[in-house]
Image 1 (cartoon, protein in one colour):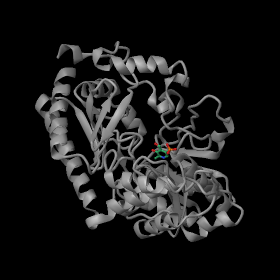
Image 2 (image 1 turned 90 degrees about the vertical axis):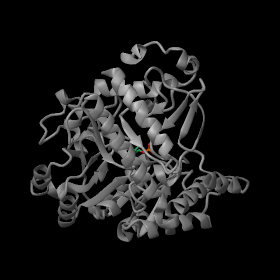
Image 3 (image 1 turned 45 degrees about the vertical axis):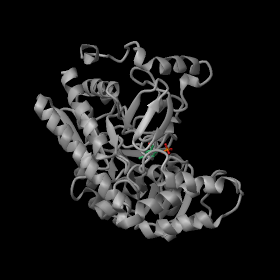
Image 4 (image 1 turned 135 degrees about the horizontal axis):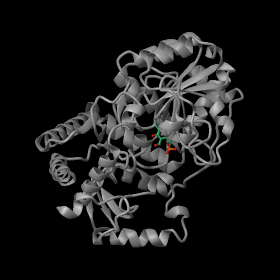
Amino acid sequence: MADHANPGPAATPAGRYAGSAAAFERATGSLAGGVSSNFRSGGDPVSLFFERAAGAHLVDVDGNDYVDYVLGMGPSILGHAPADVVAAVADELGRGQLFGGQTFAEVELAERFQGAIACAERVRFGSSGTEMDQAAIRLARAATGRDLIVKFEGHYHGWLDPLLVSVAPPLDVAGPADAPIPHLPSRGQLASSADAVVILSWNDRAALDGLFNGPLRDRIAGLICEPILCNTGVIPAEPGFLEAARALTSANGTVLIFDEVITGFRVAFGGAQARTGVMPDLAVFAKAMGSGFPIAALAGSRALMELTSDGVLHGGTYNANVSSIAAANATLKALGENDGAAYGHIERMGARLMAGLRAEAERIGTDLLVQGIGPVFNTTFGRGPVRNYREYFATDRARQRLFLRALLDRGVRVTARGTWFLSSAHSEADIDQTIAAAGDALAAIG
Ligand SMILES: Cc1ncc(COP(=O)(O)O)c(C=O)c1O
């Protein structure tokens, strides 16, 4: 397996990826950077082009079949092209897509939310997580008349100016761990975006206490977090941390916002708020609620959500479009069936895979770090447990990249950040095939 030993980021795509390489070359003549999202560029060895997907498998334009743990960056929790969802959308397509008005189906979906999500007294639908995070902080500022939003280093809340702060800051400009300096990652961002955000380290209880007992407390409108951090490793809150955030925000009149774009309908039917037992004032959902169709939601207390009828603007031409609503209703119906049997399966497959990866690492004698929970976990190299962005940053991500490439070469596709998403379509055979490929990949990279 010498050819896999050190593919390197700049390796010329071998025959295996030749079709994708040619397609990417062509794409650069029309699509800016050859892609439609910056997060899809920089693939190793090239940004892949895909032909089709079904269940847990994905096929690229070169005919390579992958066991897929990317799942469209998380959404395809029932696997790709789930029959019930496809049929529900197909049934609706002939009726029209957008009416510039309401449908019964969107009310049905809102009622499903009320049944599933603890904080969902009222709901609004949109098309992306980014815009619903924006709606959440707008509501927080309107409700409190304050300006500051607290967010945590390494958490991602979409690509708009106000929250695209300290997502993956280089450590030489990130300031001290107990008082990180807000970092704006994109050229063209309004510099003042950084002034309206206070950055803390995840799981830093002392800094959280200090902030809510310090001079800025009267300015804090909202605190937003991924309740289980999934955009930097997979890092749960330590026991007591979310509870402290809940208590401090309540006492201070600050709006607690859970960004459940990844965790919603993935880590439990009731989301991370059900899994952790901590209820936010507002929560944002997307990804798993729609099986890959563009849909997102903001849910929360009646008092906050009804501010949308009292001067707080939330709009969107495509909100609650017919096919996305049909997809979400069908997805939530499938996820809720048989007492949430899908979640039992996902947990079991995830646990089997995590255990298998650890066993292979031990057999080979390498320091593969597998951290997270069944529905979503991360692999990198180093010592755990990792508690925050800086500890994750210190893991050996060069070796992580080699591992991910070696997996790809062996028919296993994982996100570029080393995060693995499970679906109800992953079978024991898929998991065992993956474990064997991972053992081979670990041996090859040394
Ligand atoms: C936690 C979290 N919040 C917000 C977003 C942004 O969602 P979208 O890409 O739908 O705008 C993402 C996207 O990955 C996310 O992971």
